[in-house]
Each structure stands twice: as structure tokens, then as C-alpha cells.
Length: 256
Image (cartoon, rainbow, N blue to C red; front, side, top):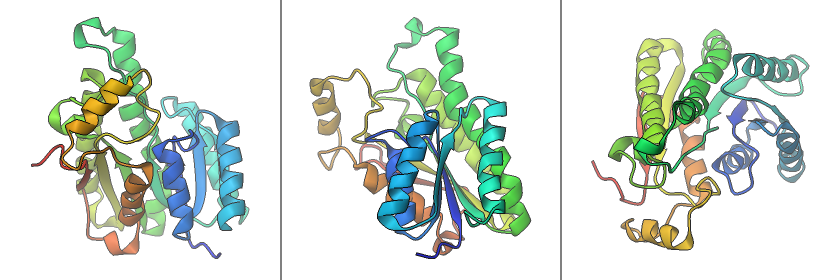
């Protein structure tokens, strides 16, 4: 399979994670993929599997999205693969790496607040800042940021105040950057999923999961593959007129 562009996906290694599903969906659509994750060894294993299964160039490596030096190293590694001709130029960035927290507000600590904000919001900022210049230089790019229905409705799914605040920050970041670079050929959009059948809600019980599903008009949580399809569409040539928008995929749990 000939790939014209590379999609970079953060948070791409975890089993039953949206990031891994997004990476595979990009590959299925003909993109080369660069999988970046805190677990760099697993990212490399998943990338190798995708490359073998689908036949696209695939790279996997480590990244701590909340650490500027780690982001710089990951960017350099991907750029080195592009320079060597292993990967085609980067055309899309999917900022998916994130963490949540179910801790009630008055039980939160400043450390918890800072950690949730750093991984979700600051991570999106740092990774975007690293990969955006190359997109601007080539006059094409698709940046897709992971937000959440929790940002729109003020929690009510699993993550509470720090998570909702961080994901709301991503929506503001998406709109402001989209406006700033509007005519550049690079688009910046967000995806706001509701409850998704992943392993991010660590510690939730089967009763809690059933209650979440009952609150969704379609009667179930989303699959990672359903969310992944939105990322791939927003990265396509056909989505070039979508700028600064948020695509909701929540089964009707938040209508506005």
C-alpha cells in the first residue's frame, strides 16, 4: 500500500484504547502511522503489528506528552523517519493521550489537578507546537484534538472537575488555533466523545457502567472504532472546510 502522508497518534498503545483504534483506522485508510505513547516499547510492538497486518509504513516510540523534552525527542524521532524515507511527510496529528480522574472536587489535590491538566491540556499544546511548523511549511495539515462530552455538560460521565476543565481547555485551544492559522491549509478540529468502551475508566464498577449506558439515548457506549472513524474523516482531504469545529459522538447523551 502506498501512503502519501503520515498520521501521528499520541496515546496510541493501550489495549482497548481509542488511540490504538485510531492508529489502525488511519492505516486502514492508507495512511502511514507513527504511534507515540508513554509505553514506547508497546507502541513499537503495536506499530509493527499494524505494519504487518495492513501493509503501511508504521513507527512506534515513546513520548511523555506533559514533558517538553520528551515531546522534542519524539518529534525528532518521527522527523528522522521522514528524512530517511521510511515515513512520508506528516499530514495529521491526533492528540489523544489523556488521563481522567473520578475524585470529587473537595477531595482533589493540587498535584492531581496539575497532573490531569498537564497530560490532557498541556500535552495537546506541546505536541501541537512541535508538529505544527512542518505542516505550515508544506501548506497542509490536519490536527484533531481529543476533548470530551464532559467538557460540554460539566462532567456527569466518569471524570469530574479537573478532567472536565482540561477537556474544556482543549476546546478553547482548538478554536483559537484554528482562527489563528485559518488560511494556512492546516485545519484544527476536536472530537468530543461521550462514554466509550475503553479501559480509561479504571475503577468503575459494572453497576456504574450500566448506569452510564442507561443515560444514553441509544442505550450503549460507543466503540473505539466509532470514535476513530471521526478522526480519520477530519484528517481527510474532504474535511478541508471544517475549521475549529467540534464533532460530537455521544449517542445523544448531550444535545445542544
